[in-house]
Length: 301
Image (cartoon, rainbow, N blue to C red; front, side):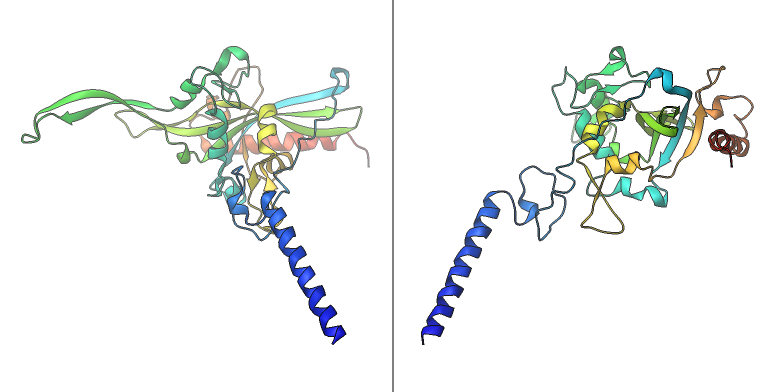
């Protein structure tokens, strides 16, 4: 009888402790992640998912001008429709939404959470206000408004603006610099800026021209990317962050230009390749191979 009593007392105390712990966890923001107030939980889990949310940016290693013996600026394009880049269009947290939210978070006449620039010259004079960011890619058009419900032919024309829909962005252009640091004997890449690219239709024709919507300074984006969750094909419990995706070069891309004396920003701007896409592709591969060869020739075997 005494054993039964002790067993029941132990079970009751255990249940009380478990309920208290569960209540404390819920009060601290645990439990069902869908009820979190910070908006960073994207799915329901049976545990409090903090692995990406609590990450901090690791600063770059110091780099002295005297230690840089080689540097090359390249432009490349990431197409989110490629299989390797599909995580960038993950519907729960697509990259276009991350950029748009950060760029438009602020007052209309001020700058957003992240500064946005109108070109890859990431200087203060090229920075755009939140109001200007909201107007990017918009199209001015004229719409007929009926003024008589009994006569549909009686209309007046009004000028209106159709805002750009960021979800249509399927390509991102990257400006990056490849650097060889003789102090550490390391050849590495650092991204300078990222630009969402959209297709602009020329009025009165079927011609579509790819244009940069705006530019983001990657140094600023690192602070946002580090806590933004990205889909991991291998393990839902170990989500990647956007910073992981770019720092570890997990994307697929192709080179579209390099620094040159002729001020051709892209390969296709060069008259030699303008009407020959296949030759432009070979030129892209040549640039990539030159980087590999330059580093390979540094070492003796």
